[in-house]
Length: 240
Image 1 (cartoon, rainbow, N blue to C red):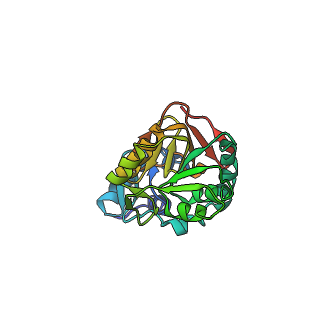
Image 2 (image 1 turned 60 degrees about the vertical axis):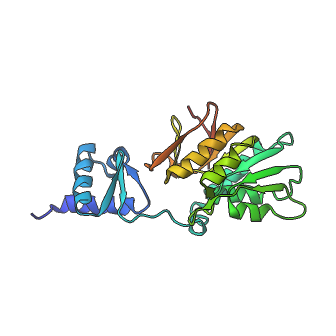
Image 3 (image 1 turned 90 degrees about the vertical axis):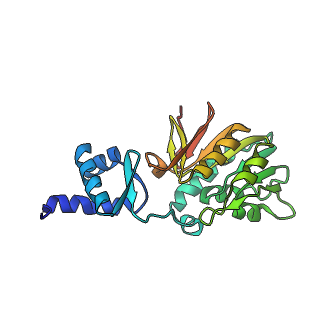
């Protein structure tokens, strides 16, 4: 059966958007100016054809893989620089120990802390440890574990074992998705668990993620403690 031209165009638009990652049905409907029931039907037929993969409440492109860290460093660069600048207000002279998550935005925070020799920085990010490892910089503790080929961050039993035994003044977390009422979303359960664990060991939790992370659908979510903060390129956003 031939597909009407308007339907074909809409499905092309869906395919194009899903190349960037997971989208929710409400977000697709709003973006494309159609009903959620129409989007559900489109996604069902695209999934049957093997072109998309359904997620809870949405879909992603078949074969979508999170871009590697090097590529993500160049995406939303201005937004990430703005976020890093805002984040510095949470590293006052009274702060002594922080956690810096793996990720392209937290690397920019690390670059701005290279001369804080009064700090202890705990990280699971390889690039962050290397950025801060110089004689006049902070004391750096690298958390061991299995290294992700995409984020260059450690996860797994060894990582969880170490993080369960530390306490930090501030934990700066990256995220693949952010929901102010839920917490942060990640592509794997292991990543979500690691972030949930360190959040439980921090006096203050600050999520660093640009506004494009809002409304994304991902595989796993990490709930965060009351009072957590989300900083995007515009500054601090309300949560909870």
